[in-house]
Length: 326
Image 1 (cartoon, rainbow, N blue to C red):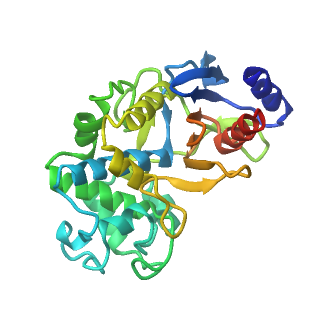
Image 2 (image 1 turned 45 degrees about the vertical axis):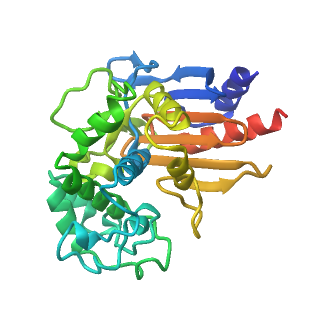
Image 3 (image 1 turned 180 degrees about the vertical axis):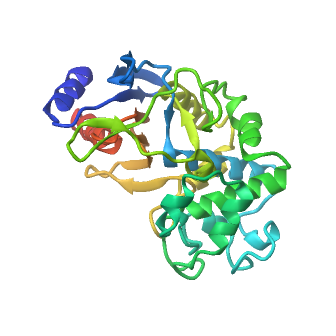
């Protein structure tokens, strides 16, 4: 029934969907299918092992990495940015918890007028930090929710300072290798990745074209990862089984703060009052969605390499269907 419903829904949409969908119930995959092309020039179809840029779903990995450091007693939620990055504006007022929950007030580099030009250029983590330092604050630390890629870039730098490893290497050692996420990593324009999808969007005449260029070094720990639906399923299993984090700190990660955001996750209630924990991502030619219906023990993962029919639209429709199946 779920398969026929998804196919029927996609057929009613004017926009083409290109990507992968995976639905898990109580640890078992109940739906997995690929649509569209990984590469439209070579007519290569998407498959279960196709790698997609996941954009801000990266923030889940960054949050988990920070919580691992907390469990290792190398970091505390009340530590401030100035403990790790000297001379950061208001650094003695901005805590790790503020960064995790988007309440730091730090200006978002993706909102800056020079972002488009700079996004073409190679940036080191230190370059990104200096860029963030030059941004005006949106609010005082702890006072407001302002979604900020900058805050998660700062978290990435803090991971490097504490661990002595690059952000990428820390993820490999603490998350990717322990969970056997063999098809997940920090994207780079220099490195050839087998089975990685090309990103597409529509031009002004609604024709499919290559997505606009971005140097992935600009996205770093806020949006720089690629992954597959199967790897994200393994991550989900690792979170569920407390393989990476204890049950106590996982509960903290999934606990909503004042503004409906936990540590790396949006937290809300569905129309049927079920807890929904999720994150969406979007980056030049790609969208991604990772949703968890907590009471139902269900996970929906949707990755796409065409920014036409958004993964959030598809994933939310699947949630509605699953709830109405009661």
